[in-house]
Amino acid sequence: MVAKFPIAPRFFALLLSLSLSVCPFASADEKPAPQAPPPDAKVTIEPRIRPVPGAKSDPDQKALEGRPASIRVDKTLVQINVTVTDPLNRFVTGLDKDYFKLFEEKIQQEILQFSSEDAPLSIGLVFDTSGSMGSKLQKSRQAASQFFKTANPEDEFFLVTFNDRPELSVPFTSDTEQVQNRLTFTQSKGRTALLDGVYLSMNQMKKARNPRKALLIISDGGDNSSRYTESEIKNAVREADVQIYAIGIFEPMSARGRTAEEMSGPGLLNEIAEQTGGRAFAVDNLAELPDVAAKIGMELRNQYVLYYTPKNAERDGKYRRVQVKLVQPRGLPPLKAFYRLGYYAPSQ
Image (cartoon, rainbow, N blue to C red; front, side, top):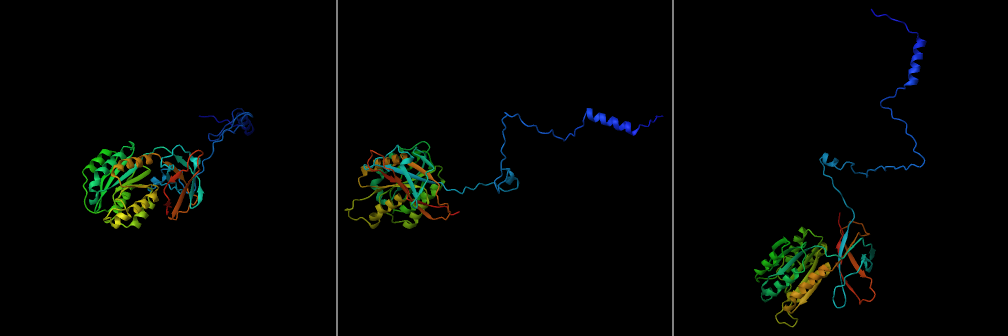
C-alpha cells in the first residue's frame, strides 16, 4: 500500500522556480547566440557563389536527367599566320607584338595572343604524277625529301598524288620515310586533275590534329582533268584555315607546244596560294627544286601567329577581309608581310 501525501500548490511552485534558476534547461536544437569578435580580429567572409542563370549547380545533374551536359562558346578566335621578309626575300624574325597592327574590314582589332615559336604542323603533300611529269619526277622527289628535312617530330604528313584523278596515297603519319617510299614507286601517266587533288587534300586536312595546317603542291602545269571548277576550289580554300604553298615546274614562256592549261598554271597556283597566306614559286630549272622546297619548309618554321576575337560578333557566315600592317623597325629596310586575306565568320 502506497501512502499519498498531498503537496501544497504554493510549495510546488517554489521548488520549480529554484530548479530553473540553478540549472536552466536548453533545447537540443537551440543554438547559442553569436558573440561579437574582438575589435582587432580579422573577419573573413566566404563569398556566396551565385549560380549562372540557366545553368545547373550540379555538373552531373544533366547526366542524371538523361541529357548530356554541353558548353557553348560564343566568341570566335581567329588565327592569322604571318611571314615577314626583307627586300632580299630573307625571313625577318625577332619582332614582337608591337610591330603588328591587325585590321578586319578596315577596323583595327586587338591582338589577344602572339607567338613566334615553331609550333607543330599538319602538312599535306599534293604531288603531280601526270604524264608530263616523266622527266621531272626524280627532281620532284628530291624536292620532297629536302622539304621533309625541315620537319619536327610532332609534325604529321599525308600524301595525295594525282593524274587523271586524285588518290590518298598515304594518310596522316609522322613517319616521313613512309611518304618518301611511296613517292619512289610513283609513275607518270595520264592527265592533270590538280583541282581535284587540292579538294581531296582539303577534306583530308579536316582530320588534322595540329592547329597549324599547310599544303605543298608540286605540279608542272595547269588543270585539264578535274571535276571541280576553279571557282569551287577558291571558295573551299577561303573557307579553310590551311596555308597553301606551290612549286610550279613550268616550261619557259617561249616554249613551243605549250597548252592553254599550262599557260594558265602559274596564275592559278598564285591565286590559290595568296588567298591563304602561302606563296607560289615558279621553277624553270629543275636543279632549283630541292632548294625551293627547303625554303618553303623553313618559311613555315619562321612565322608569327596572331590571334584575335573580332569586334564584329555577328555570326552571319559572311567573308571578312583581314589586313596586317607592319610598324617599320628602325634600321631595317622596308619589310613585307604575307598572310591569309580573310576568313568566313561562323554562321551559328
